[in-house]
Each structure stands twice: as structure tokens, then as C-alpha cells.
Length: 90
Image (tube, rainbow, N blue to C red):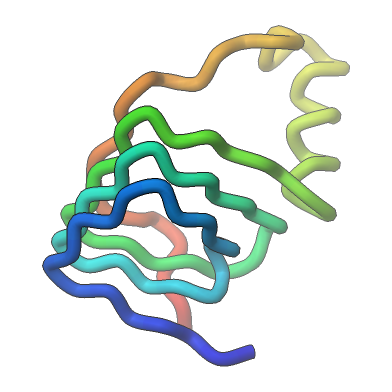
């Protein structure tokens, strides 16, 4: 799968598959992001009012966490997320 690198961008109202993009010094607003559990990378990037969708292994992990009580069903994610990833791509 090709990887698109975004650096120093402000991105508004776009849709992304997280594993297919690298975000460096970016700001995403009102975006939709879908994550399947693969490697990802972002550095000094903020997400404001973004919607997250989880598929495949990522969705399965969330379901397990809800089943065993680590997460509450319907628990809202934090409204703003900023920082560096902990799962850098190889």
C-alpha cells in the first residue's frame, strides 16, 4: 500500500486510512480517520473534532476492552488529541 506523507499541513474535512498516511507537524480538523490496527506514524500533529472508525483487529481490540470493562461502551474519545505516535512504521 502506498504511503502519503503530509508535513506542515492543515487538513480540513478529509477522510484517511491511518495506516496509509504519515502526519508530521499537521493539524487535522473535522476529518474522518479509519484505523485497522496496523503501523502508523504521526509527529507533533493535532486532531480537532475528528471522527474515528475502527476496523479489523483494531475494532476487535476495542470490543475486547469493552467486554472486560477496560472501556465503557459508547465512551466518547477525547475531543482533541495531540502528540507523537507510539507505533512508528518500519
